[in-house]
Every structure is written in structure tokens, then in C-alpha cells.
Length: 187
Image 1: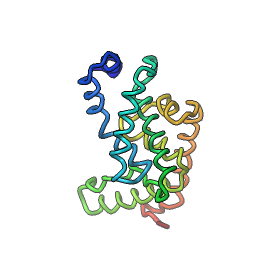
Image 2: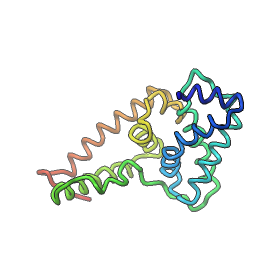
Image 3: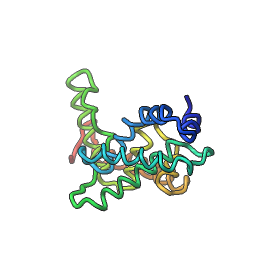
Image 4: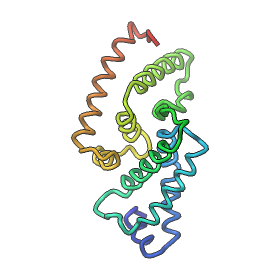
């Protein structure tokens, strides 16, 4: 069932439709929230608060827009509220490079993979908060479009694309500096 159909049913009071939305988005939304707050204990609370807010504000949702973008925007705002309240916040390591340890079948492949992973992680760590969010939304979850990402981050679609393609060029230069003869240096 499409998101719009589920939203319309939720607006009519159908709790099973709301449960289907939760089931559909819970895991990816949890990953997204964790990528912002880097706090396992509070991620579930923030996701739960997000779904409560969605239910309470479902009448304000405009069906001409993407439900997932609206949902992730609410989650982003809830995460930022948590960060503001929390004094122990440290910038999250990007989920793009997590859980990749199983890739590579030979020892050489694994060594090269881990070196490349470190290179990507180092590049991502140098990015600002907004750029990290763009990368996360573009490559995780449902691989969102630039338009959806722009709605979540309150940026124009042009600004999101420009940041993304600028980072792409920067990464190529960054990688060229650190890779010589197929070997990663300076990490």
C-alpha cells in the first residue's frame, strides 16, 4: 500500500494503517536519528516522539509532497531538540561507513576495503553537519532524491545538489592525495 493511501486512512482514524507506516519506516528512521545523535539509548525515544508527532500532525500533511521527506524532517527536528537539551552530544560518525566489515572475500580485498573505508570515514569527518546529512540521506534509507533531501534540510534543491557535487569533487582530490600506487597513505 502506498504512503498516501496509508496517510488518508490514518486521517480517518485507522490505527492499523498507522502501524503499517511505523513498521515501514521504523528501522531506517532509527538509523537516521542515530546518525544525528550518536546515542543508542535515546534513539528509540526520539523515533517514538517522531511517530507521536506524525500522528498528532497528520492533518497538516500535504499529500502533494513526499510523506517520507515530511517524516524525516520531523525526525531531524526532534533529533536537534535532543541535541540542544543534551550536553553530552558528540557529532555522529556517518552510517555510510558502518557495518561494511563483511565485504571482501580475500585478505587483500579486505585490507584494501578497510583502507578505503578509513579514507571515506576521514573525508566524511571533515564535512560539516549539513553535508553529512546530505550524504546520509542520499546513500542510506531509501536513497532519497535531491528534492526530498532539500525538503528535510530546508535548503533549495539547487543548494543540495551543489553541496553534493562539490563534495564529490573534493573527495576525488582528497583520495588522490592519499592514494599512491594503489596504497592508502596518511591515515
